[in-house]
Image 1: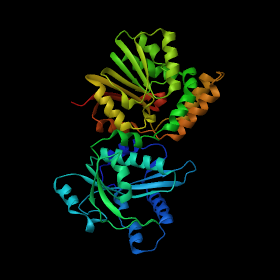
Image 2: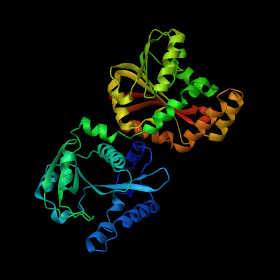
Image 3: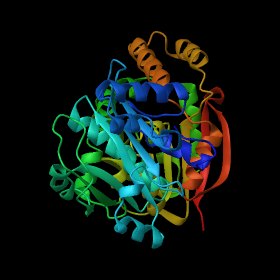
Image 4: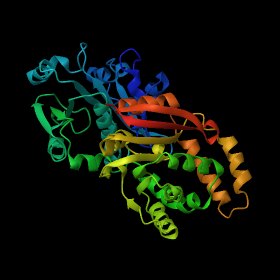
Length: 415
């Protein structure tokens, strides 16, 4: 559990926003006790070593993550402990190579308490994803891991690691295998690791967006019209639309003579298929639609927009990094996303008033209820903190859209 006095609180919103579905960061005593109980239920050996495993006192100063299954049960957990003057749990037996890294000014953390009782491949992928993203956010150079020697070769294939010690005792499970200490170079990115760690991030959401596409396109509310109309008038030059959905904004973009071209990208095939049909119906020659992840964007743009899609991004930190690289020096990034004051009952009444009688009325209302009740939207201040940490300067901010439930930011790259 993160001790408020031990970490930079400004980083917590950014870390939380990077978490995939069903993965959580411990932030309360009750959560931590639930994770500890999960560990104890698995490691029931009463030996001093195992008791020390449960009660080493470092949880309070660590990033403790856990994964729940669809029924709410914990199926995996891991702990990322940042190195400090207090040292690490294995301090007394750490090899000289660790002290050499410290003396060279490298920032270290230890990945420990890794326990998986659910689908091993999926849960390991999700936990490695959050550990990696958190390490990048808090500027860790190397992660130390005590692991079975038999697991080293599989890790060597997908990440840059180095064995620092081959004498770290035996594992506590039934296998009783020899343990070693490895260092993982976080900054040596590997395509194999990125594919593995992102394998299960939001896959379920992509299927849901495919199903939602026709309802998304079919129902168009006044609050949506207000957003698209306002945002489109601020666009100039070559425009990139992230999470473009069914491309509803293209009708507004076509009327803006200051827009030279429009590129929409979305990872839902259902959404892009509808957007292509809409483009052809509009005869919008300067528009291009791309089926792909935001992380794979290429090219340079004068204006980048994101309308009501930010909350669904699987890897927000990577996406913001790509946006920064894709934005011209004098360009603007317009970000529109729901906030923590998103009033579900009030907006539901608006849907009932404007869409009742529409053939998609029930499905549209049901799906949007589901989304709004399962997503944790950031406050305007939290959103501003996230984008500033990613290297953007805020020129304008308000929460006037969607009856106050949606935040709007105009951003430029920090000089």
